[in-house]
Image (tube, rainbow, N blue to C red; front, side, top):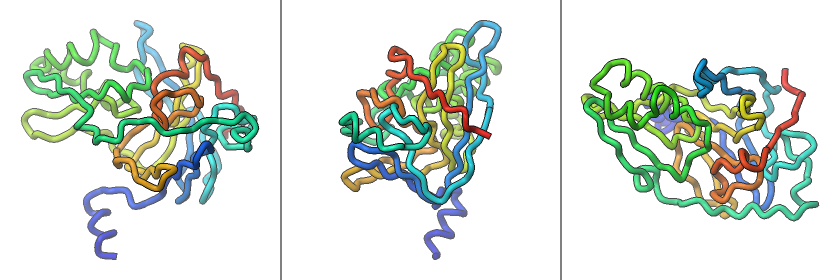
Length: 243
């Protein structure tokens, strides 16, 4: 009880878990809410912000499709067994900081783990995140660089303030969002927020992070994480059952 209290005081998530089933779905427990969020673009055509467009009924436990072919998306309907889905987990198990490179600017350091990129493309606005970081002594450039890093659903990009020496992270409650990119006519990955525990099919735990993206098209070469393959394959959710 004492440890749980200490974790809550530090703002750490003690609620819920995602268990990856071997060649099967994501088994979610702990009444973690599921919503659908879409990318809204700016006048330049680049992603500008996220907008919530629906939510699903809260359930204590549920199984989310991982093979990409369920007819009951976002939930699993057992199709993975019929198609012989190979869900082998191939992701690098090193900690985020050990996979990432640092781009240093006057006021910001941008930590970048490219392998985790989910191709959401928020980093392209206003000349791109990396150039903005290098100009972070300009208040507007710094502001946009931070916005872009925080909108990166996979957590590939994390902005660090050089003065406070702290990571700048959005505040999330434990939740899962199904992402959509209507400007590209595709559906994106599962956006997992709020330090939810993710357990591998072999029983080991992935590093707990504030935000990651899990593949739901079934084609990622970096399973269980998204690698952007939903874009060239044209993955579409097709689920109309949101509230």
